[in-house]
Image (cartoon, rainbow, N blue to C red):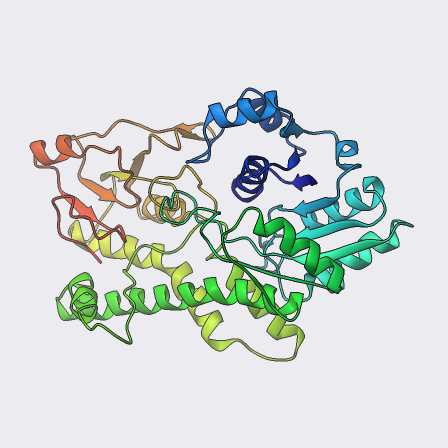
Length: 404
């Protein structure tokens, strides 16, 4: 099958490469010309996708990275895998989806299958993407939804063994989508409507958001009690049924958990409802960096003025370079507002704007472990007796007690 994947980020590139490995002819489209040039040379920022694989598929005409929208024109299936962030008011921003839909309307051929993988509110395929494409093209299209389930840096669950949900607006769309995803994924489940698939995706990450907020609230309570929230969770996890452990952290980040629940809350608002649990969980997790900064201030005798603090890991999670919605960046701002001089160490991120990762420093007042990567060596801090607080959600023991 000739396939185009619109968007070559974590989701789109992973899908494109796996589709090419499955034997499809794949155009990987992205408007970012610099990214396309990097991909053409085999370079990638995604763990598990190797330079050799990309170059081999390019040489064998299975994968073609492009920034020319006309290249999607001969595709039988076009997958939308673009960012769906929140705007400044925490409402859905579907600008990239709209641009992708208009591009498809302009260049796609008749009877093409349009699949949306981008996470959005229930009804996005039927009420947003389909009308845009149909109002801007005289061609006929099939429409399907297959929400992404990519977990960056998770080597236990790659795209082939992660079950996939699909649905379509017509029987023909469902049949063709099932054929495509069955060539990539071991298990594909068809649900009754695109709205069910879209809702399931949002609920998956809302489940995590609510439970992370719950355990973060537990950490606030246990802190007042003088006991460890991690130890409480680990004790509760000895129960072999009816419990799933989540661990406290400074908040949530990335392209899913901080965003997806707000899309479900937005849909509830459209229906005249209020998503109380979701809104409360969102707010509690957004407030965590401020609460942690205040707790750090108390740990340093009530004042952070001119205190030198270094953060280990500013990516939103361990072993990725992604800083989208990273609570570490919010924590840095909160600490600086309290008077601290903050530096950070993250070999995977490297730089943010004009700021650069600095090697671990022993001449600091406090070290904070936030998103530790597997290649981080904390022996300098250990050997020099640096005061360190472990704020990470990881269960790994780095030599210091958990601070949350």
